[in-house]
Structure formats: C-alpha cells, structure tokens
Image (cartoon, rainbow, N blue to C red; front, side, top):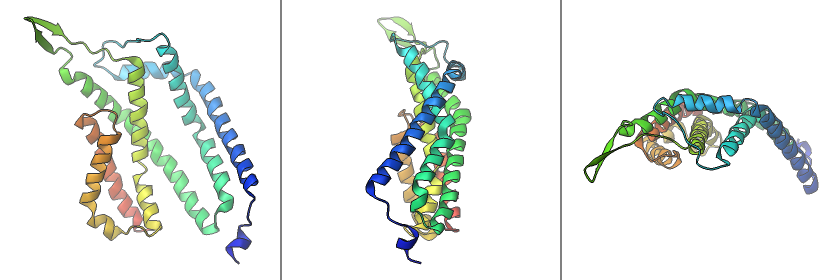
Length: 247
C-alpha cells in the first residue's frame, strides 16, 4: 500500500482548523490549571522562600511585584497541571500524519520526554536549587565587610522576590530541558545522523559543547550553578549513547 493511500491529503484549511482547535484546548487547559494554581501559589512562594536558609528576608521593590509574582507562580503551576492535556493535544494533532511504524516511536518518545522532564524538575527543585541559591547567597558569608573611609559596611543579603522566583523558574526549566538529552541522542541515532561509535569518538567535543551550553543557559555566571547543570547533562549524554544502541 502506498503512502498516499495510507495518508490521504488534508486541505490546508482543514489543517489550520484542526490546529486552532488543538491550540484552543491547550490554552483553555492552561487557563483552568492556572485557576487551580491560584489556590496554591502563596504556599509555593512561601516554600521557595523557605529554601533560602541564608536569606533573612526578601524585599518587594515595586507596587505590582507581589501581584505579578503571585500570578507568575500560578501560571507555572497551571502549565504543570495542564501538561497531560498539552501532550494529548500534540499527539492528537500529529498522529494522523504518521505511519504505523512512526506512531510506535511516538508512543515511546512522548511519555519518555514527559517522564524525563518531570525528573529534571524534581532534580532541580530538591537538589540543584537549594544548594545553588544558598551557595550564591553565602558567597560573601552574609557578613562581608568593605573598608570605606575607615568604616565597615555590613552586607546583608535581601533578594528581590520577583528576581528570586524568576531565577527559580528559569533554572528549573533549563534543567528540565537538559534531561531530554538521552531522547535527543536516541532520535539522532534513529534518524541515522549519528552512531554510537561517532558519539563515543567525539565525547570530548560533546563535553566542551555541553560546558558552553551550561554556561550560556544557566541564569547566573558562577561556575557552581554551571557544574550543577553540566554534570547531569554529561551523565544523560552517556545514557543517550546506551539507548542509541537500540535505535
């Protein structure tokens, strides 16, 4: 049976109407998830603040900062809650265009991507973020002094709430995406763009690229945060080489 017979052509307007339908469902699910997240936003913010044991207090420097931070966290929670629906809408949109053999790999990649992303978020939340934020805050020991005209100035860390939350969300998003490395390597191997031999041969080059990526993607220029992202990225690269053997 030919590909044309298996996959009848769909008019462009039908594609656009289907895309609009899926996008409406996706946006609606995120909106509903955000409404649910509004009930937990304050508790999440308090929990994140509590992770920074080196911070005696935080400041809000703009009139709308507390309001916008509250809704930023609610939106983040809404996206997390709506993720299953977002994945379903993506699958429902692309499934008719795939061959049976391609659908098999879709069943592997999408759940795998979701699981790895969740593991990345958990790793960032429980391991990377608490250690990173406290390391950065304590970098001057919280009591460093500067000699200015014979007097001492006590440096007390008071992070700005919106920047603190933005740092958290950006860091977790980056770590979640880096956990997709094994699937990216597997996909490249499946497409015959790379082989396990090539991946092993250019391992040093890959480490250099990952180091540069970690330096660019991490929201702070300090080497500690970069290493906290680089090390799992390298381990996931090695896992990708193992998975590539089954491509």
